[in-house]
Image 1 (cartoon, one colour):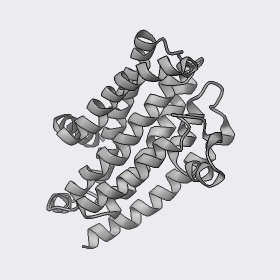
Image 2 (tube, helix red, strand yellow; image 1 turned 135 degrees about the horizontal axis):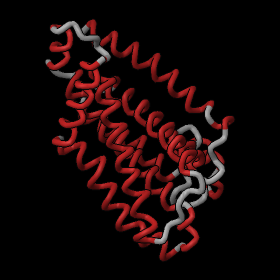
Image 3 (tube, helix red, strand yellow; image 1 turned 180 degrees about the horizontal axis):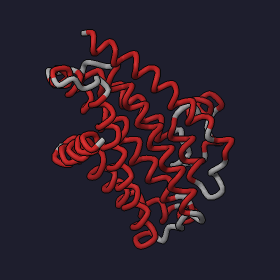
Image 4 (cartoon, helix red, strand yellow; image 1 turned 120 degrees about the vertical axis):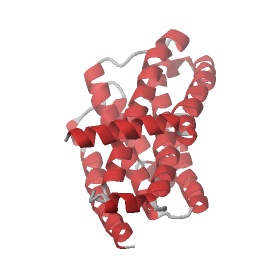
Length: 238
């Protein structure tokens, strides 16, 4: 067990030095937050009620869909995976450590947004922080599950970039963080509800952490566990 925690800590330190993860998990989300936070609250003062949740959805989506998958390709699409085999480590070791490391990074970024929003833009803090952080954990984990599938399923970096954008952009546009999702046409509205961003945003709102809303996240976790298991077996056999 101590070896596992050591590998997670090591991966976390490696991720800090990774320019790709640094940009997607910290630099771009923070710049977007600082720029758009002021614009949103000036144009739409009522958005102060949901600014924290909106900025977190954007940050987590970018880190999970654009930041994590390339790291998985670097590991499972190269000779690094042979190191796991040579040392008798399960093929899932790399995925688990990168998943947990990314989870920590995205949580830290979310805490920064939570702390700065009231100070910089007068945003309203969530009524119940325990419920908010529980919802945040579910949302980050679900987003990383989708990112993990992308990183294991797509082996070409160019294709991955395109597919990741096709998941990221709808997550931002159809989740309700920029404008109410009810204003969208029915087709786009229902499409947005398939993505973790919409569900996570609703879950993080005040009074939104309801047991009946957790079935979606449990379904995503179960589906990702099965799909990633199949993809890892293929990786191990290759």
